[in-house]
Image: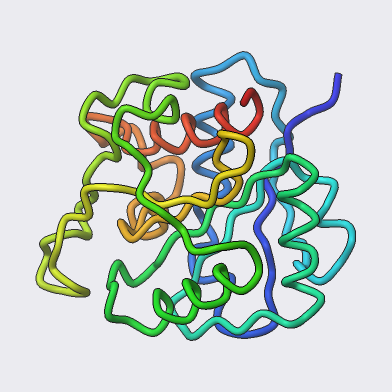
Length: 203
């Protein structure tokens, strides 16, 4: 049986590895809640490498300005054209910040401009049910970043499916803790990450 491998996309600009504990947390949640066969550890793969095309879901985050190389843009297009999905999360949760502005520019160049995803989209009930759309993070309204709750995620669509999912909610901070700490949460805040993975694997 082929196991799902959580892949973090490594890009040459910025700080692609700003949330190093996110993969372990989401891998733990997929193993705990679903019957998906999942590899016990994730991988970091260069976006410019053709090896990135082997992964059905690629996670990208960071705080700093993003400038994709020609090879990185080409593989973003190839990956999504082949049915893969990219999840980009702004680790600053700031629509006026440098990550958001530059990432949006680069996504638009590589693919097209992301649009709002309706909050009744199947993404929000692909495994757990989120009736109000994307769950709010503790990073929002905390006096840092843009101090806004972002009501929608955004995406680039292909044939009616999300090819690239973009978040201004900073799930990267929300999920960047040691998996052993999860038991102290009244509600497991990584559950939406499970939805993203299940959606990417089953759409």
